[in-house]
Image 1 (cartoon, rainbow, N blue to C red):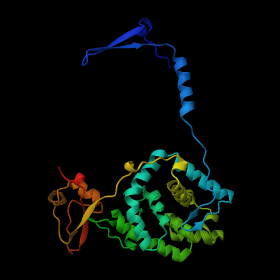
Image 2 (image 1 turned 180 degrees about the vertical axis):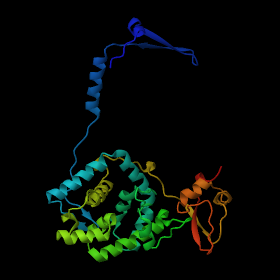
Image 3 (image 1 turned 90 degrees about the vertical axis):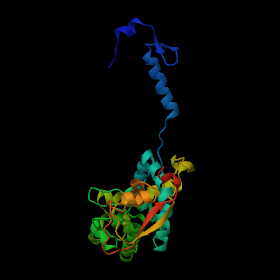
Length: 315
């Protein structure tokens, strides 16, 4: 739509008075919008480019080679590499958060005999945030309540350890090891984390297959391992995919000390202020505490994180 103004057509020049500075700025009103648009398009051509990408010649997941020689497998990885590369804001935040949380997750995976590549499973599950899915899956590892309890996490009105990154990672390791004993394939283990062992087992039998890459699965599970692979490829080769991440822009690891609680806490707000932090910061460091109090009738010991970085302290 062309916007016309009687005043604009009559005036060649307009003056804007900037009273606070006592200055006059002169603007020339040009009607040559066609020329401006042409210059703008030329600038876009010179400075903005989108490139097609190619998957690597070879890639592995948890030490298992991915059969990229199969065109259908190649195209599935190709899709996820493009999706994660050109969803810039999301992937940049992956890099930022991973710098904080991978150093916590990686040692737990190693201690439990889980391949390091599974840190990327947590990344695609939750973006390394304590999110809750529409189905109720919660935390970095997206546990449903029943499954979480099955693998040792405490969940009640006051405590939900699905929000506890260390404990939920240990629980995830228990599941992953159990699935590996069943399948002997880490790719199938990862797929089962998305859709459940019962579903994977029934599909392997129904389709007479023995590999994730040969299974016809629902769209989410069919993409699942390839999403992990794509993120792994980008993280290991960031500049190849156009990501120039400065160290100072990454989120630093959290610095804290552990404090034991083995009784009742009537007010976590008062508790936090005694430690010279806000209630918000106490919950930020300990999101598994789900209430503003802790009754703890059995006097169970809980370890809470208290930040040592002075920037988190009350001022």
